[in-house]
Image (cartoon, rainbow, N blue to C red):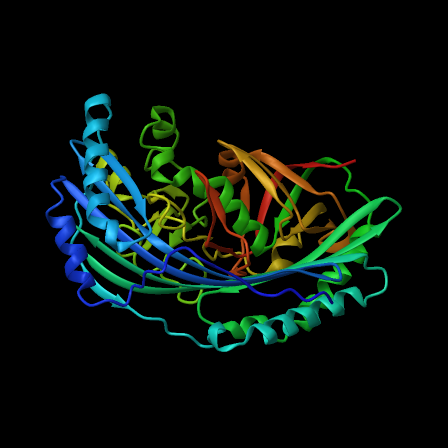
Length: 477
């Protein structure tokens, strides 16, 4: 194993532990001269490591410090970042100047939905703190998983990534909100690769969360399954292309609802698009009475958990489809103001370098009445059982996803393994074609995240029970 020295990156010598910080920030936003002003101050420390094959590719410890000022003047935004509190007052003036200039040049005006100001302190409540685990022990833990994969006959290579990030956030706005928050985020992805006769296959497992380093211990059985999946896939035949009934496992169904429907539900994708306002008109029927889709920030421990969003709005459960009917969308204060609706606590920023925009948290299909996997497949004469996700893309209402692994279904039973299962279609047709929603809801967090407007990877979660979809086009041989 190659050993690397930890690399530390510090972006500022300033410290957030100073007396009167609350008074300083709240005073600056109140006398900014803007119609609305907010200041976000962030101090993050991250540990990360990765293996690629036999090599320990990266070990890093990073310290990210800085903040931003965002102001609204005559309906236009000014946004600047800073890395020292010594320059903060000048940055507020600069943001106001930028907003005034934009107001002279732009006709499009922003409106903020009103909120009730809050003052709160949020401290970490951890089951197992990753900061209490030494870097050496983390390297040993994940190095052990790496050796286990590489010791499996037939496995060609491996890829492992782990990170943990602890962030202290201070937030003040001119409406009277003051927040002092601590956040933890951590995740790992473990992959095994097999190559045979020019075919490359991958098996993987992921874990993630906000409050428990213990999730990353005792993963030997998951690691073994990842290696087994790679070895089975490399020998599996390519699926025969066609139209099938498809059963999606909770992970793939969660990816589908996040990527194909969740992004369309974000307010900035709707507020300025008259066509999408008609397509996503509240009250429109999109599926059976058993279809319920929601987004929530309330699930403690998941990577999508947030007590407040990055505009200081308390998070909540937001129903998007209830009993098959479209009933909500995901808003920042700005998109809610534009559409005359209520903020939902979905304004999020990856770091202080970005302004908050509408983003998902934990996006889910709720439990349905159709039992377990065996209940969903028992009447399927020929179909596909698709599990996990190996990537995909969306383009408006169209989507394409590749299953991480898949099996044929024959006469109500799971049959042979197949590979290269690609699922594509129109999201609204697919929602209407969901003919079964199980009662086995599950969330599996990982090490990735959501990408949008250059902000990647934002921590999110997605969950679902098993679902059954008719008339799915499967790409294959």
